[in-house]
Length: 307
Image (cartoon, rainbow, N blue to C red; front, side, top):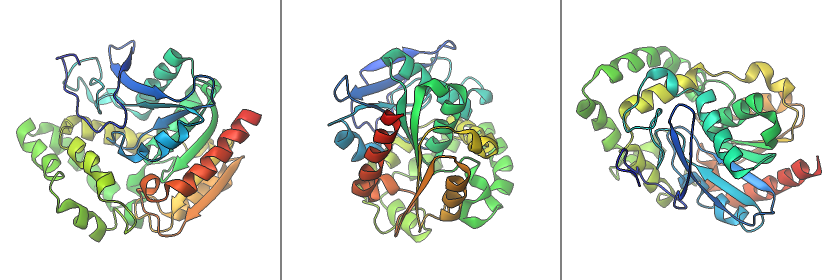
């Protein structure tokens, strides 16, 4: 690993491959499964490493070519521009992250692929289709929404009102000070707290979140804020009716971050959308009900290949 930036960890598979973007950003990734099998590309959520792919990835790799990457500023990838410090606020938009995915797919000659997006990864998957439709054969949107989650967070707009102030304060703080809340997420008490505030559900395995919490403690707070800015600014709901590939919309009925009503609305707007509601599922759907999701994702890849 180059000394220019740290590996923040949280890997399902070692990130032995890399591609360099035109702006210098180095995106690291792994590819597993038969070379001639239907391709699947995994788009993670907000600041997520690989923990939400721990069940889906290895199972799909038995009969698919599975690509798992780290966006800029996450996991083993560099910050935007190729270094270890975030260069500017505007380099962490959802289209930037979708560009990271497209660069990996171009390097691997992967496409059209079934693109799985979890949480913010749903935005990334849709942005990828918008920019490079030839790379996308099908889309699975897991616990994610096409618009800003801050507008629907716990069914209120409070987060949307508070975020602009937070996004100005955090980058202005000394890095050591701003990093304290990030490091606090590593504490074991955070799991029961997350359940208490319904960020996670009773079906969320504690061991499935350990790598995520450790990884968050190694993220630059400015990267976190600027990525959140990009997530908040993106809205793909206006062109969902144009998406012309088979699309699975999977939501949990106990998801306080992406309420099931949003999933239903997306499935209605998507021309080839199919809705899957999992009882008891929270925002951590991929590690709560992997078996059910795998059945539907495999059906989706068959639909994508049939096209």
